[in-house]
Every structure is written in C-alpha cells, then in structure tokens.
Amino acid sequence: MTIWLQVDIRSNVPIYVQLIEQIQHALEVGTLSPGDALPSVRELASELSIAPNTIVKTYNELQRMGLIESRAGKGTIVLGKAKEMVRVRQQEALLEHLSTVVHDGSLLGLSAEALRDHFEQAVQQFFSERQQQGDKS
Amino acid sequence: MNDHALEVQGSNPSLQMPSSGTAIQIENLTVNHGTTPVLKGLSLQVPIGSIFGFLGATGAGKTTTIKTLLGFRSPDGGSARVLGYDVSCQQREICMSVGYISETNSLYDFLTISQLCDLSRDMHRRWNQGSVDRYFQLFALPSNKRVKHLSKGMKSQLALCLALGNDPDLLILDEPTTGLDPISRQMFLTTLVREVAAAGKTIFFSSPLLSEVESIADHVAVLHDGSIVLSDELDHLRERQKMVKLVYMEQPPVEEMTLLRSLPGVRQLEQRERVVRLRIEGDTDALVGTIQARPYALRDVEVVAVRLEELLIEYLRGDGA
Image (cartoon, rainbow over all chains, first blue to last red; front, side):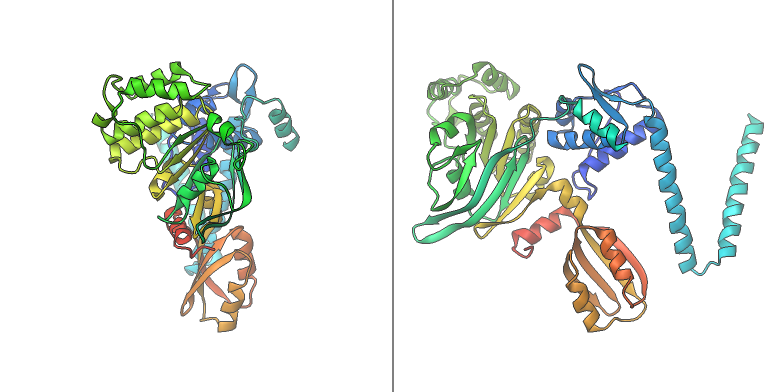
C-alpha cells in the first residue's frame, strides 16, 4: 500500500471525512495517481482497525464524487480525471476562504480599499519573489 | 455526474459488504425481573456488518438485553429477532449461528485448552477447527495448559477463539474486556476488528467504556433506564452535533431566547449577557441562517464541534433525550 492513511478516532471530524481528505491529499501530492488501485475494504479496515462499513462509506462517497471506480477483478481504481477534480474543489474552497478573510477584515475595521491594497501587495510580493528565485537558479 | 455515479455503483457489487438488512431487530421489548420492569419498551436495529457498541451504566439493563437476545430469558412484551430468528421460539437456531461471550466469562477452568475446545466442538454442529487453530496461534495460546492457570487476558482470548468456532455471522459480547489490562484490551479489540469485522461479520458488544466504543465501533446505542435514548452511526453523530456560540451586539430580550430554544434542532441553550451558547443537532447552516435573519444584530457566530465523549455522557446520564 503506497498511500499511508490514518484516522484520529478522537477527532470531531467523521472518520470517513478524514479518509476522503487524506486520499484527496495523496492525489494532490502524487503518492496516489490515476490508475492506482486503492486497498480493498477488508485490507484497509484491518490495517486501520476500524469498522469495514466506514471504509465502504468512504469509497462510496469518493465514487459519488467521481474520483474512483470499482472494476470487476481489479478492485477500486483512481480515475484519470480525479487529480484535476480535486484541484478544482480545492480552488473553490480557497476562494471561499478569501470571502472569510474579507468578512473578518471588515469586522476588524479594514475598508474595502485597504483590503484591496493588501491583497494587491501580497500578490505582487509573491510573484516578484518567485521571479527572483527563478532568476537565481 | 449523478448518472455516472449511479452507473458506477450499479456495476460495483464487490465494493459493498453484505451491509443491507439487520442482524438484530428489537421492537418495543419489555422484560421484568419479578415485578420490576428492567427493559421498558426497548427498540433497536443492528445493521449487518456493523460493529455496534452498546453503552449503558451498570444496572441499565445491558446484560438482560443480551440474555434475551440469546433466548436465555423470554420477553414479557414486544419482540426481538436475531439473524431473522425469533428469540422467543428459535433459541436453537440462534445459538447455532451466533458466537457469544458472557460477562462472567465462565469457562470450565479445570480443563486444558484443548479439552475445552473438544467439548465446544461436540456442542456445535458447525465447527471450524481450522479457524480455531489459527486463532489459537494468533494469540499464542498453549493448548495443554489448564484454563485456571491462564491470565485474564488469555482467558478472554480463549473465549473469543471458542466463540468463533462455529463460524458465526454475528458475535454478541457482554463486556468482553472487563478486567483486562490496557494492552490485552487493545489487542483483543484490534483482533476483533481485523479478524472478525473485516471478514464481514457483525459484532454487537456491550461496554461500560466510552473509549472502547469510540475506538472500534461504527454504531452506538445508549441504554438508559430500560430503553434506548440514542442509536446512531458514530460518524453521523460527529457530523450532526454542534455547538454554536452567538455574540450579540446587545443583550437580546428573554422572549428571543425562548424563541431560539423552540427552533428545530436546538437541544440546549445557555446565556451569559450577550453571549449565547446553543447545542444543536442537524443542519447547522440552516439554523444559523434562521438566527441571522432574526432582528437582533450579531457580532459573531462561531460553530464548534461537540466531542463525542461529552455527547455520549450526556445521554448516559439521561440528559440527552
């Protein structure tokens, strides 16, 4: 098993959600790639010492999200478009986070103009630093 | 995308464990000890393939429930089915297809392990010596040793091996880890999941310990004063039970608090001046939306998860319902 999943049973995050997040992360960092097989329900339940139905629920949810598919004789396979789908989802989550930042900023008394300035400044700083690093190497 | 998902699920029999249907179905069960009611209209469903933790304070009626499920005592009212068999008239069938470990763990302690094993084999028509031997090896149980010379941990391992001897579809365990040290307890639980649950068998176990239920169960029920006050998937509980902290601009009037209390999903409400804390169950976003639409301005809304342990204790104490 190349992916290394773990669960925190004390966490308030449902276990199947923890597993989905880790599998998405594995796709993002490349420890899991399209075409790879996920461990069987039995294997994973045994490795993590958690109820098999929780794994079934995790896989069903990943399947509903369109990231994996179960093929007769081959097990559960990561689909080709999975990586791109995860990326889109994460972009959405990030942009949502941006609106929280704006909301919190306004509560702290920052004007629309100030927020825009700071955002612009952060963008400029990041890209100019990255360019400098690129020049060095 | 939905169409696609459906199509995928349709072509996918291998992913599903045999998880449809119920292994245990109890309806409105009443059991009396003499004239004292112990179970007072208990209803419960245990899904096939689940690891079901049955919590309750001492004296709540856990053992009585289990003994009734095994047909050791008959219901005074209501009904119960175990693997489809009626507990009031099909005890033989139940005993043949269920593995059971009692609370007292009363093994004949003058016998050696292999003698006890022979005895158990003679009592069961369906006996799988191969798998029993495999479990003996797994726990490194010495077959020539007398039961009375075994440690508590080994005794419960032995009881588990024997309970699995007739290759049961359902294991019913009455406080199986009571008296075990933490390491033996952990090993026992891990084995239960890895060897028994992973093979698709249903496990129903009673326990006085929250941590134990939390660590291996996917379903939990809480028995309080002879009836079930909570029965749910653990992940579902983690998801649906939240604490919401509202900070108002100004202290809201008493009538507003009465209104909040009556909103669907609000289970508890506490107020300290302009800060209000709600324990809620269900759709958090919808409820927060409703509260935000009220005429009293909010400075801040914070949603915090409720720890599973806290929640279960609430129910165990009987405050949950």
